[in-house]
Image (cartoon, rainbow, N blue to C red):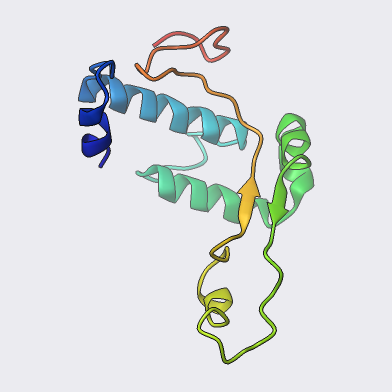
Length: 129
């Protein structure tokens, strides 16, 4: 929850839950659309199910992604801490459990469509709320 951080800020805009959920749902539908999702092909109920079904159908073939998404993914960078050579250390098993290590960083180019008040920013290709 962001409540403690928000309470410390004097100029934090008030955002209704309805607006937050509208922005969340719009963002989720944009992500699915960029991945090539089609409602006709998938009757899954949740974003997680739809995304899982879509990624499964792609079968690990990046060529099946839209060209713009492939171009964006070429700019993704993974920074990995040097592997721990001492397998008896407590940090060693983490690699088997977690996708990223404690000090690893996955950088994905992105842009903000909405500002801190959950209102559209600048040129919003997805349209208005």
